[in-house]
Image (cartoon, rainbow, N blue to C red; front, side):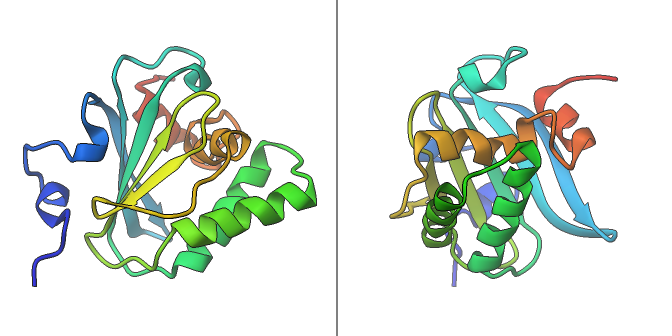
Amino acid sequence: MAVPGLAWAQGATAVPAELAGMQARGQGRLRFLGLRVYDIKLWSPEPIGPDWTRHTLALELTYARSLKGPLIAERSLKEMRRQGEIAEPKAKAWLAAMTAAFPDVAENDRLVGRYAPGEPARFWFNGQPRPAQLDAEGSRWFFGIWLSPQTSELALREQLLGERG
């Protein structure tokens, strides 16, 4: 059985529809205890300046292993909290939105998230849109998991944004 998006994850040259009009700007790999969790690419229509929050962009994650969607959502909220205090009602609403948006994933599954300033986040799983969307404020916090200076993965941030030193 063919897995939608698998050819793209393996290096096909066609750009997925949800990334149309964008170019790959940076990429990296997240490892945990030496194990590959996912590969990630930053896409945008134009180069990203010093303030990533002012740019439309997308992050494409290609998973290397199976993970449960609710656990991805919980970990995402934990990483979002690294950027600052989140009021509990917002945290609950954002967790619910992410839990609805993030399915269980397996090896070679692809999750794409789109950020645009002042707009709700949009998500696609293996090329198919996900039903729940994260509000505009939650979107900024979510993409900050990778792009904020408070990220837990500074080296990965530098790879995505093309920064050095």
